[in-house]
Length: 112
Image 1 (cartoon, helix red, strand yellow):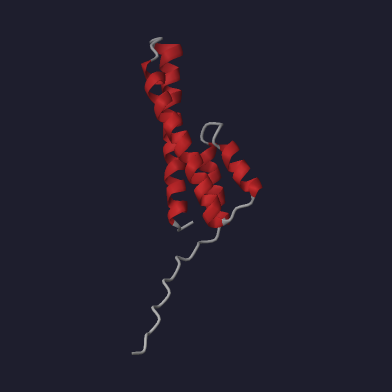
Image 2 (cartoon, one colour):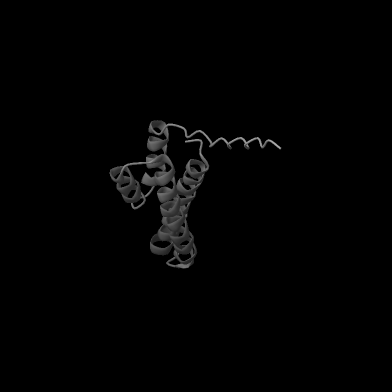
């Protein structure tokens, strides 16, 4: 997907995956190592923001590339389990044709 929406969706999927990693590490430290919730406090908020970013760019990419409702729903569901959003992005990038940028229409010549 070489469109702007496709690139932003890729960035969102990557960011959401990294935020999942941070949240899981924070949970490991909270429940196993130090029993301190600062990691979950910080990465929980970061992951929440990246989750919303992912969903917004998902809808944007779906509109630009005219995805079916089923593909949109699968993309939304893929954002819930860890790391599946990035796998969905890779899968859909292989199956979505590139959108050619719109050519500006030439200005009409005016005869005087």
